[in-house]
Length: 119
Image 1 (cartoon, rainbow, N blue to C red):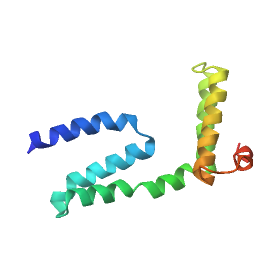
Image 2 (tube, helix red, strand yellow):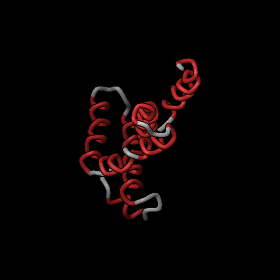
Image 3 (cartoon, rainbow, N blue to C red):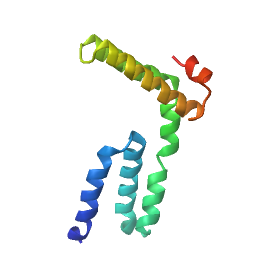
């Protein structure tokens, strides 16, 4: 049985680093649910699908909180203070972080005025 799953684990190991944090967590939860499916009497793909979808809601709520935005912006500032990134890189990362936050909070088609009020 272990040899049957090796190609899947190999493909999963290549896929996981290329995903967003949502994709990585969802894929990991789906894989865990799929792995446990035979032990709880469920179909593997059904368990994978449910496990894949389970973390999305809580993650969206967590990452669309103002405190999360403040923490991420604080991380960029601390990296700048440690000279790990330049001022230009910090500005770019700050802009990208705020834009991503606005897209999560207000939707990808949020008016620019909504994005401008964040931060």
